[in-house]
Length: 60
Image (tube, rainbow, N blue to C red; front, side, top):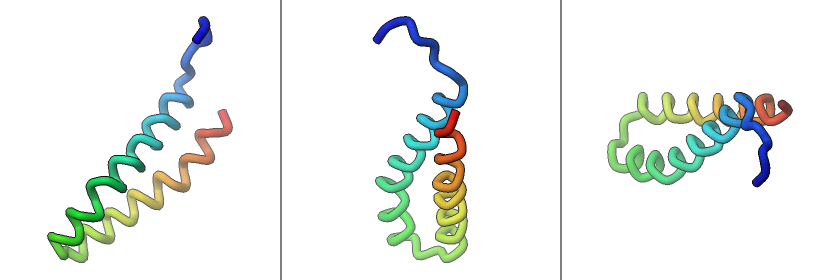
């Protein structure tokens, strides 16, 4: 890999990507079985927030 430093923005981008993967794996089944409308809105909010921030942090 070399001696390249890992920058803060790379860590943020990786964390957002990991959040999206975990959210996709867990949230769909959980929200389907719970049927709670409020949880679905919260889930969509965080998913949209992560998707909108990913390109911003990916520029650095």
